Length: 245
Image 1 (cartoon, rainbow, N blue to C red):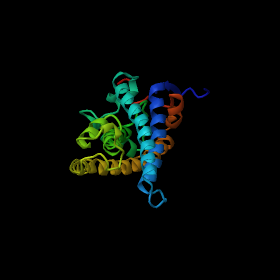
Image 2: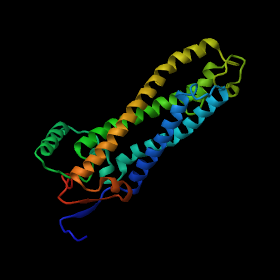
Image 3: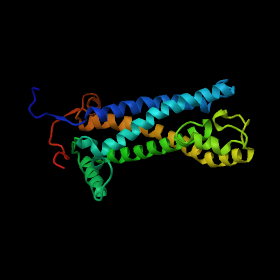
Image 4: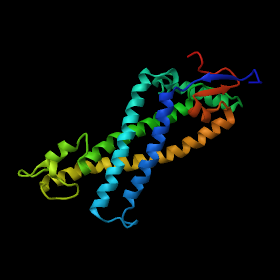
């Protein structure tokens, strides 16, 4: 590099970057198939077979999403420095950190971070909360809607009629089920569907905000935040605030 004022730092390891892109792609696919399910009637998708098929594809992609998220949660405890939860989740003095950061920005300063800046940490905390809510509610609906793991076998056993084989139950088909228990199941699963839907809407909004502020941070503060998610490296012109933490 010709300008000695700039310094390159290795920040994100391969596992953290892999999580980011697998998460991004799986969420895009989940949104696509989720919208197909939500507007199936308007799209002319009316058969039970098609309904089940869409749900199955959505759930299978959801398993990829859930596995990736669980691995990322574990990586937050054992992974490289700036992927750890202590550099993402708010700590005891976080409100002061936020105030100091906003004051610096208001004063025209451009503090640079190897990890996420304080506002980015706050946004990521909320996004991870949304992802966890989506994972849990999605797995519950996978079991209660189409008898998929990890809860599907228990659900099928619960709703099956006394003389029916739970393994032979067909989703959305009342044959072989106990009508009262099916009704109870619908009451149980409905709130999880509502939570899942509105958490998805909120996540879509957060994705738009995330992209906007990543670009804004790149323009205002520099550091190659976008390219760092491909290369794992940031190039900064001043000492990072969080270098010695």
